[in-house]
Length: 411
Image 1 (cartoon, rainbow, N blue to C red):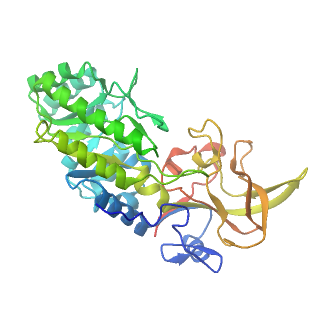
Image 2 (image 1 turned 120 degrees about the vertical axis):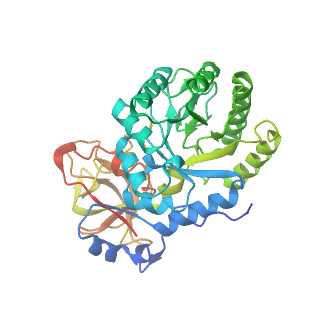
């Protein structure tokens, strides 16, 4: 364990030189020239590497680390991360193709999602990827497809637990859910897998996401391990692997502090020690997406116009919600809050003004910053939205109003 905080625990992960944001060892101006146009997303490979190393330092040694590709499926990002983690979780055939291109063993990949079609399932079986079963009907489909293909499938069972991750941005477990098999039905399903003679790889228990509260994550970890022990006993089936999900959050808004990962790791080690005799042959996995990539990315757009409307200043840019839905507040926020935003070419300048940053779309929802105090900007300046490495481009309505799709770069 280590007591060091990650260097990029706040919005100062990108250095500033001569009032210009630096990313990947170069100035924002230089990078923009290299990219050739705005808007674009940029991801810093060094920050991604540092975050994964920090996870390795803080989590127990026996924990395997998997990357949830849905957070950022850019091929170059996935290729970089694949060399640093122990596995990859995919959620579509498109993501499967990206993952297989990395050269990681398919047996180290897991395929999740409540609505996998037969074509996707067949491809996953043929590739040798572990399929997370999300319903009893899906299990039957896998068995039938495997017989047709003449290939023994590898499966894990995603459990819908009888608890949730408290204070979670998105609750993925507890109560009725489209995800996974209800915990009370799981022993029956586990015994059926044994009867079918297919390869059982373990359990996936994911109860929530985007959580900054140590106590909530500790509680979820304890209940997850207890549930795994209970299911192993009730089904009389050994659990080769237990994917405990993730849920580690990052700070987006004023007043939020980085997750105390040291405390999370120390408590997890304590919990693993307690159940060591009951799950002695089990491999434990933490699966993370946002926590690995979000703080390593920025979204960059250019000011096209500056106008005063009845006393309110607007910076109108060539980027917006069609590229970065989350920053607009329309991706899970109940009450809209501003992402951290600055004028990337005038950072830390003394002269500021209160402005709203909007995009080019014909909708009032196209809002990147609502009356924020920012460095005074002029036409041509570059706006930077931080915390943009996860759920950015691919989580946005990029076809809305048919604007060009922005580039992505890993630097």
